[in-house]
Image (tube, rainbow, N blue to C red; front, side, top):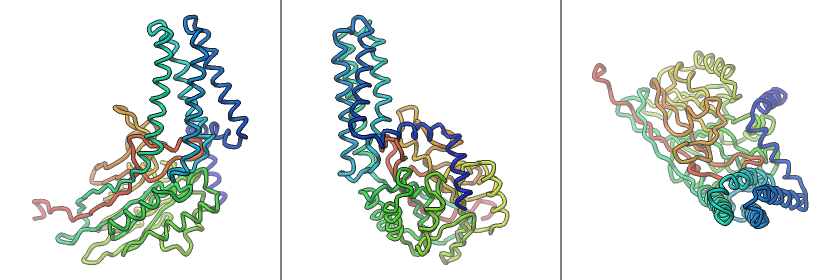
Length: 406
């Protein structure tokens, strides 16, 4: 299994521009501090040189470089202190490098407007844009990630017997644990307060920056042991590069959480209520995984409620075709960073922005894409913007009888 997962991981990394970009900006994570300072000074010198090249900005060019260096330093200070606030524990040098790219791009583009704004106005615009970036970073790094929400949704499903009591199903995805923080404490508290009948988890337990870290693995085990429900906790694996099969699969041994790997389980909740759960490994290969879905669906139970657990929304076309009542996934983080009127900047899904977050209903199949709990890893800034973390509580009720059935 380990060799297979490594093949999948290499294939995924080879064709993922996002992953390669994160790896590129992750390089400063291992640099000594003096080299990081020298790199920041070099970037500030570049900004100064470009501004000097614009005649009317020559006088304010040193100030522009100083302003840029100051905001780079402010980013580094905030990122370095995030572990103290129990928000994130990612490598601050790598995140700072990733954030320096858009900051520097903005600093190099502002001089294009010097003819309209003048020297003082251009410098003010530069400082204003950089200050706005700091405000957005503060919100995205310190405010929104702390707002773990319990999203509640009611669904009427035809597989439940008329008059039966509802089923409370809690869905958790994309924990991406680095070290225990406030979100993990809130997750357990919300899970206990919601009193679910059963809990399902759709992968990505570790953060990419910590997916071989023994301490992080132990913390994931402790977290999973704190989740319980009367009719059980069921889980599937996430993306192969994140949930390394040789690392994550063993942690479920002896765990009160059942890991489903291309298999069905039937949960009998009494009073005629059954949920048939198919849990599938996610390889992010729609063709190969779609063929497995078709084969597993054909061999699985029928009737009652059929629930598909798969890490990413990429199986929605097959889920509709196979007649699943409910399909739960995560992976996209809702974009993690969303822009007004545009939505998710990135989704990491091969279906793009077709299924980004929330509820979709197509051809009798309900899909819910969770925004997840944690963050992307490596050099990806540990921020959320217009996409707060969530877990989702579904209340599943019997569908009203159709006029013909009545």
